[in-house]
Image 1 (cartoon, rainbow, N blue to C red):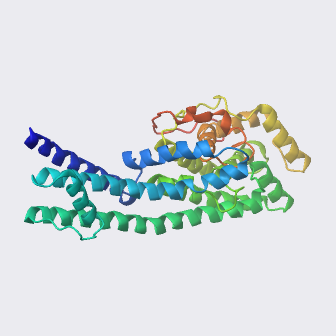
Image 2 (cartoon, rainbow, N blue to C red; image 1 turned 90 degrees about the vertical axis):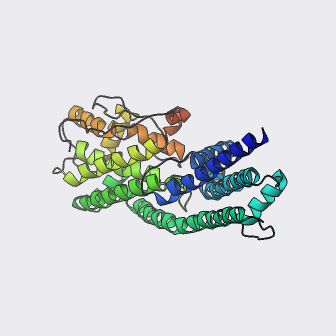
Length: 371
């Protein structure tokens, strides 16, 4: 009976160690979206705690949530070390018949943290001790090397988000961006914006799925958010293509496509459900009255508006439907500051958007003026 328990102990301990190492590799080394049970569990558990603490006005919520992602990384490392510590404790107890449970745990802790106050007496246990010490150093080194890559991606993201406040106001909005470029007689320079943000969306898609903790890293300024900035740019491109009387801007079409693919793939990592193949007449969160108000403002400022308002609304809705659900869900997930047409209505979605949901290749709605 005791022999069977020791065999089970070795097998169970090996499983825990492999779980920790596998989680570290999937989280840090593997350059693709590869969800880890341990990492996801740590961030979900912390998320429940932080969301319960993030009550009151937005300033308080922002201060509380600013600690969520950094603490999540620390707790993830702690979870890896704890699994390794417990796993090797089981292994030591199972391999050495004369070692008690407390002594096995002491030996595991001494090996994991390279303290050296306990030394195994047999050759095979000594080899196991060396392996545990190597794994402990490996896990710690992984997180240390992980941080520069993460903060490099964070810096690239935030440079564009901060610069957008100059072009699209605070909080950012697509309507404001079009108005500012029109007033400065630089409407043709919007093409540069679409190109720049197409590259931004591609970078965010790659970094925020392979380094998913980045999604929860908040901007240095409380009223900035990568999610609301993305929504403002996409709305600006959608308004320009659908409603403003300018020559066709293919760059804006590419920007929208890059944007909704980015948001959908980030949403897919967090299992946020969305329609993978929406039709142009699928309802969106923007009402016709809100769109009419934005268009009327631009028209009153001298921006040339397309005469066929009915077609313009259908075109705008056809573009917006591609990213409407995922934009609102990500704004809610990250507790973004209030911004028009994104986080100002994301709470209506609630956590129901975080149910399990798959993703399939997305087709752009085949309507007039679409890329």
